[in-house]
Length: 191
Image (cartoon, rainbow, N blue to C red):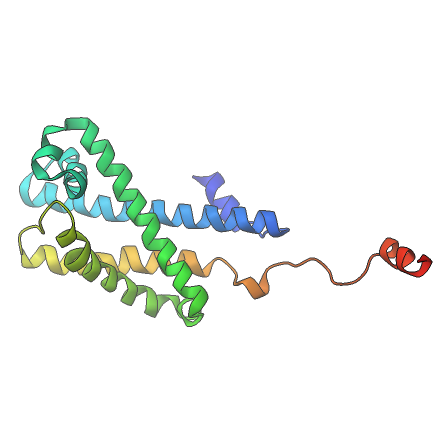
């Protein structure tokens, strides 16, 4: 973990390292967002109904397989659910990052827009993604809904915005010098 944080803190020294740092930052952001989200779901449902963590991951896989198949699949569907969960978390971070390249205000004001983005993610997941999946939206338990909106704002949208803000816009990337090298000058004058 410490090594990953050190890599994120380093400044890129060229185009290749900038691209690698950008990819690592977005990946790490997805892992952080996914971990916050799954820890919240596991904690909430464990306290509320004694649900085991494997069941939380299977509920994610249910979106692809359906509830019956996900529950019947045991550890395999839990692993699939974990993969799908972290994939979605990475997409959430990537979408904010890409939007911030079109709307720079998103990274100039990451706290405000990150919180709003988190609420937007909750709305899209609950009213677009889940209805289009092979599962159904869970019970309308007010405390779950309220806590989920708060968690999406603080622990999903905000980190997505903060990780996106760590990546400099294209204009501020280190560029190759436009100054001709002495060898280029010599070649030009000798022609």
